[in-house]
Length: 418
Ligand code: AMP
Image (cartoon, rainbow, N blue to C red):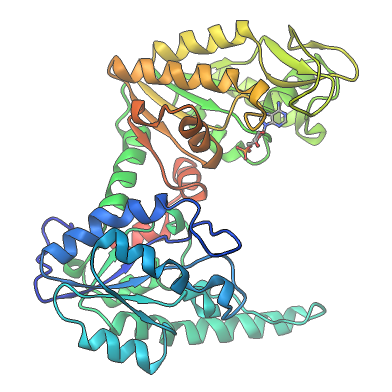
């Protein structure tokens, strides 16, 4: 079922959103992007004559805690939706059930943080540090058992289920995946945000216009290895940027000074170079670097070949020759995936490489390429440089997007499609 096909008139919809927004010490929302991202879905259901039961998590509580209460976002949700929003202090209690059952068309109920219950994630809590494996096993079985009741209760509030929380789609939690089993195929669906994310990932994985270029940046090879391996059988060009560069450079015999490097991943880097060759993938590595004599924005800097970094110096961004090299490849591409900055973009003096990559992607997009930017830091990059509107799609998912690109089936997506 799709959200556009379903008739919500007179129906109660349980909608799982990702309202895990950052709050300051006075509980003011410092970035409401995630709330805004769910609005099209919420508004559509209300306009269609449905009512909303909204479930979300906020932070990583270990049990009920005022700090992680969703009541802090209630007022802002009302402002965004332009309607009054009721609140249930406990997503499981009598109050939630009564309020949900009394909902009329056009009304909205926000449930308290689902993660106040261990059952949401299905992981035991409060285990002693010295718990034995047997005790852990028993506790896990117990929470999995009570998770069934928890999930059933959440499902009982509503006539249909909508998942619009892409950020948690890679987790098989009660409200993101398990709950879907309580609804038949005709009464469960993705929200608009989730639909867009699924479509964007599908274009990158299954509907590729060539040449396809992936730009993988960030700090560590180890955290990107599975994605890189999966991409090697899909892309034409694989650009390696960011801190990962130096693990490759060192593995190939270059001098990297004190640049970030995973010494236990040198063989792995060489193996990736070999695999790229075997598969005919154009692996594009940096040729020069902007180096610094300290890990600081105010450090002294200069440019040098990437494999000739002097002792005591470290590469904190790509150099001008590399910028040109990367930009050329990107501008000639028809499908582009960008994950991870080319340098320490948090320091103003080391943003130039990431900005150049972002601008090249925008230019390619203008010329008809499909571009997907995703994974926390690259999203921060395009936002910082004001380039978000120039790319085809900016994903809201960090871990979820990366797992999807790794080729994994995301439980939150599978549960709707089953
Ligand atoms: P990731 O979370 O793996 O995508 O990595 C993003 C982080 O990598 C950012 O915080 C960057 O500052 C960092 N990073 C990128 N290039 C470098 C570099 N050359 N040296 C150290 N850190 C880097």
